[in-house]
Image (cartoon, rainbow over all chains, first blue to last red; front, side):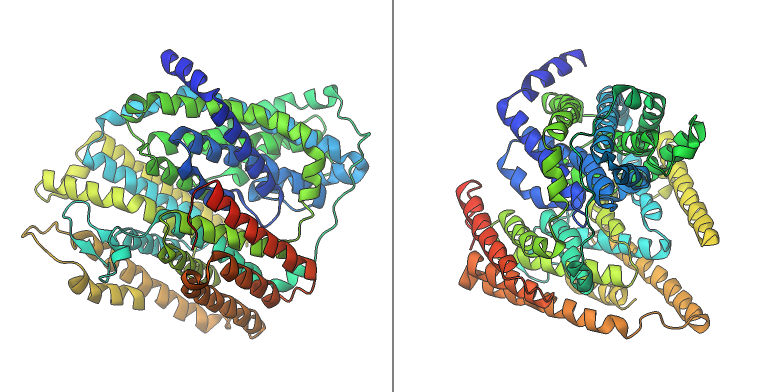
Length: 496
Length: 134
């Protein structure tokens, strides 16, 4: 491991890597800061651009976007009372309250420092936890990989919102879509309708852009009157300074929230939103001044921000080692890893040692660069939040088309992007969640090929899945995950 | 439900079987389609039962907005058909301005900014990313 860290440090420091880590970070912060634009959208839009970069640089740029976006959401939460991302929802409570008192700059600085702390610590945990976890997967055969994929797909239950049934249906549709093209085991063409462009299957990037960006354009159009109204931003007083003592008074909340964030992030199907609210509540419960919460508490902002940024490193642990993404953003990251030949599993830290350690070390530095960018560009970020959604629409559209076309210089991909955009919009309209569809598309091939291999090995007997210990563990985890989701959905329904 | 039934009937024509084994190229698609069919049926029954107790939630207020979405979607499809013939810049400028018109934007400078941005994207992709946009 030590050797890998040294190599990673050396490679990470190349000018190209440093440049694109910072570019990614900047893009992430901008997308996170603008309400209506999401981190997911940023990753999806800029994924095609990473094809021209080396695998390491491309992934580092995407991680930059991911980490930057987690922090960026707090900017609009503090300045315009609108979280740029769902992860920053808890930051609004005290962030905007403090900003209204004329201390917007202090609120932004607290959010920045806490985000950097949470991000750096979670990246260090990722560096030391990922390689040993990946090693365990060396004992995996087709049965284990199939049950692991089923466990991954079971996250559908957690990300389906109120209607799990619709989530499962969307997941099935995703698996069926993943089957378009040539079957990996038999070589037979499936659902290609004699269309040459479908022979190799549906391209991942146009599908992603369609599902998340084009559907967003359609959704904004459906509610176009909202595009004509804009909330007013809080004025920033540049004489306002955050005192170090004020920030240090929240250190316990920051440390506690960081660990809550890492643990929550590593659990598939959760996310930054849950982590930040949980940490916020915990900080309030343990605080000496709980009465300040809701009225501009520094502890409140720090707890929420440390937690949602700590989620990034935690969420990358199962994604990079087991190939189980916990949510949409990490699902796209998993797709990006796979497209670059970095297949999660026991061999990833052996066959791609240098690349992986460079990425892990880079993740720590990305969070440190966030401190520099955040401090230097704080005035500019306050202007970003004022860009109207209506102006962003044609800009996004141009980027979507160019991105989808760039994947394989094909107009067919642009068409596919629109089809999936329409599909995602229709799904939203009828209450079907889109993330399960994405999980089905990503994990479907892994589940199918390993199911077939396992059944061939066992002569068609399904007992192979319950006679191997690791398989049994994954089956139990699947049952637990589904049970927990059903329970939480029932509690939510009762509360409603 | 309709989709799953359609897929079920499509399987024989769309997936060829070249081995005697039961675990062939149709094996998993059949399982998934049956699962989709089963859950669709359950969902349908639930929807019918809940409709008896609750009134229709899709009111006429959404109709106008849906029409706008439909126009935009048709614009997208026409755009993808024209893209190869009139080129990225012209097609995207037209679509971008059309989009602003659909959402009733009257500020002329939005149209200018959108046009300039399209030209900029075209230049960036061609010059720096070596993508030969149509």
